[in-house]
Length: 128
Image 1 (cartoon, helix red, strand yellow):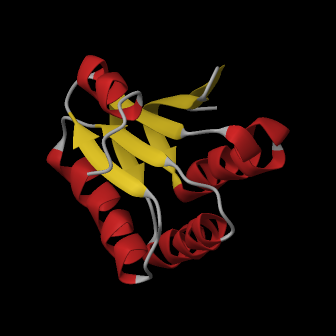
Image 2 (tube, rainbow, N blue to C red):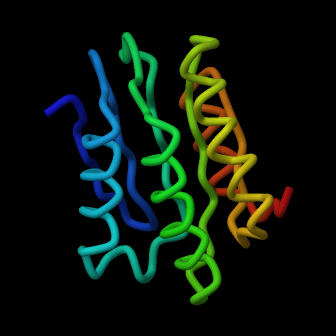
């Protein structure tokens, strides 16, 4: 499994590594929503600094986007912080964010190049 899951007091952090596929992204997402802790989570941190590549097919990205937007509309308010230093990975995540915003997701998204600043943002009261 090319990711590790870390449940934290107010959210979740995933550390992805190696070659990541659409199926593995969907698996991480499903594990989050199946766990009762997701109902009180305030953030997700997606750490990709050890990821070599991401194969995220557009149709599979659309599926996850629709599920996440539905969750945002059901009252779950999350900050999504992604940590990426590779353009290829950053562009794929930005495409997901663009689709989410187009569908009026209530979640907040922000990209970072280090975990320290990602944590500062998810733990802040900032709504930008």
